[in-house]
Length: 400
Image (tube, rainbow, N blue to C red; front, side, top):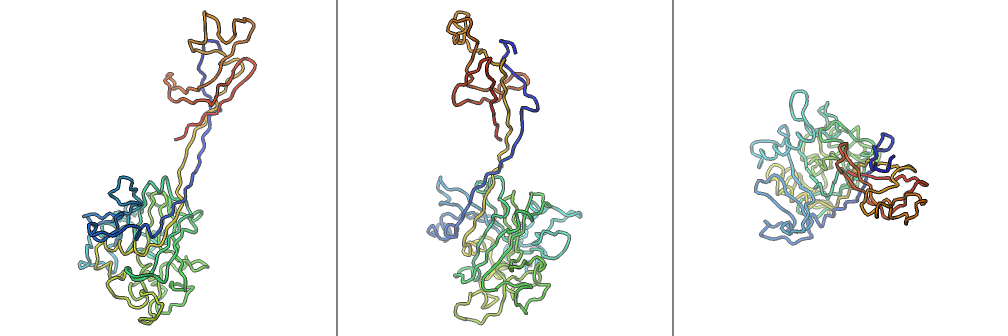
């Protein structure tokens, strides 16, 4: 390279690309979702961090009172009902909105079949069969602030209380995507998704691995997917979209819903000490079936929040990088174009000794386009001496 040349073209061997996945643990406590902040009449008896809307399609949860400038949106809750649901009728409260919510979420997350119909949510991810369809679904739509690029597969853990929506819970269900890291699906227009599995204490869940003479095999969703530990498929998690979809039958007993889908045993004696209210009766104003048909979406979301115990998952930030190796051979970049490099037509750093080899000090790497427009600048932590006796390879990484 001549003394007057200060640009060098990158070859294919001078650059490479990498992808790094960064994960962050996201814990959400039930106290934050329901209980941390005081309930106010100005917010219709809800906590200050819960925002409701006049359209009554969903409600939003914030980490601070939502009117605060420091509040961050955490997630939205909604509930939908498919038009073919056995609970669907013209007498159901806000039936049009419940059907519209279901269809909107299914359209985005499931897409359409070959006949142009919106696919129903399917608890086993198999759209080709009629088994395991979720006719009534609960939606948790997480903020992009928490999810970042996607939810890490296999990291979801959600605990919900069971029973009367306004009462305490002596039983709880744990929901995980235990096979998400290697058992996810890719047949969704929204990206990859995994099956959520539910397990509960005291053998209260129906299925082939428990005693439940009152429920037929056809009333149990996808028994073949019940694993050896008794976990049952109960929903889906869409990793890139940041959405969890749960079947509402999680909160229903065999006497509350027809096939497919009762998850919990029914029939405990009324007023039995220590028995959760869920097992005492199939009716009542605060049971899931009654809420689905007789309450608006916002009030149902309030009930679900009251049963929220905790949730945790790891988010993922995908960091794509292009790495450039800027190579300065022994006979390159030994001079500087800086006007102060010369003094009286002599190289200042040679101290007037004509026998001293030329040298420069590298402080900055500039990356230019093909027409010599400066695109990026990389700064060194300290100047590096460059002369004909040494060579430099500087590693420059561009993240995007």
